[in-house]
Amino acid sequence: MLFRDRSEAGKLLAARMDHLKGSHNLLVLGLPRGGVVVAYEVAVALGAPLDVYITRKIGAPYNPELAIGAVAGDGTVVLDHNLISRLQVPEDYLEAETERQKREIQRRLQAYRGRLEEPVVSDKTVVLVDDGVATGATVRAALKALRQQRPARLVLAVPVGPAETIRQLAQEADEVVCLYAPEMFWAVGAFYAEFDQTEDEQVVRLLQDRAALLKGSSRDAGASETPQNSAG
Image (tube, rainbow, N blue to C red; front, side, top):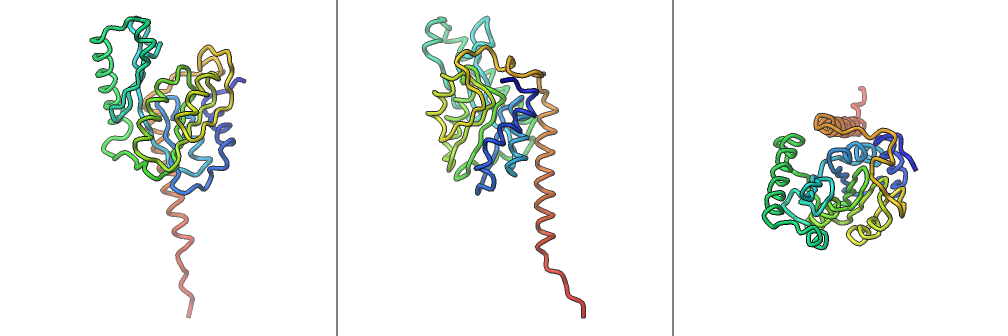
């Protein structure tokens, strides 16, 4: 299965979640950066607000693309202890890299949200969206951190991911929606015709656009409910 781009993947993903449309207290969270592009389409289709939830991969020494763990915005850290042991990752490297990623999370939060407060997650149906998963480290950290905030329901939605990883993540979420979960997996980008890097500016624009659309819809609904004065 090949997606044209992240926007198409988001629309296809949303079509599989029509049962969530109109759910009370629905919130869509995108994992930056690419996951926010997918999440935007999901939020629009489901009529839900959109925000970011930031987790950062802790990369292996000399191979930063290989995840040996991840850290979430609230400080939750998830480590692959078996992989760390096999690679003999030094403790001081692990501590330094974890702190570096925590600083990057704070930088991105400031860039994306400014002074706006984090959305309330408790008692809401939360849909966590990414553009795909490989090892699942960052998604697992996000799910673990979000679960601690007691959402009413926690849904993971991704266009693609390896079958084994998806099976593991199904134990962390109340529901997993995945369009394609092959047994043989290379990289998330291999399943997209276009997989350009998403910039911070695009993330900010999508968040602002969704907020503006929701505000406009709310204002229009309020106007339609205002009783008209009768003449005479």
